[in-house]
Length: 148
Image (tube, rainbow, N blue to C red; front, top):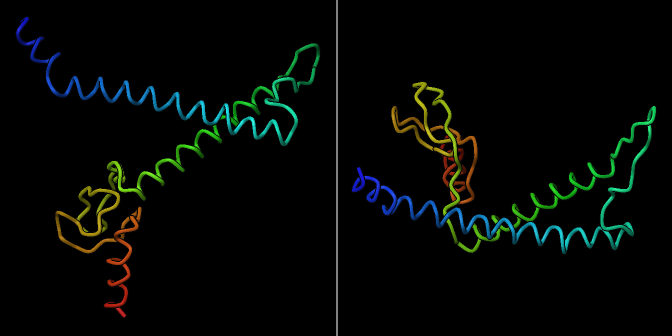
């Protein structure tokens, strides 16, 4: 049992997972810092406050702190914007593997194919991708020219 555990714990997959987790945690801290320390400070420069947590109103003695919600919503949107921009930048630079995730049914044979598939791997029919990658745009455009 010990040798099996050692093989599992010291196997390549476990180290890859641990390394990915550590790098992901550091990357999340970096992106959160960018959103909180740079972008939210731009919001503070525009609106005069670094956050809206002081905004509230009272109903029957209960405080509704809608400002805290607005601050968290803005943090979320800015964080999403930063992540989107970083992924686009990394994709343009050719770093990382950013293939579309998920699957869908082929309209002809009803087997599942990747969401960005141009041809069904089961029935070999040409299909329209549900998510078009930039490098596949020329292939789809040439199909429409041939059809015309």
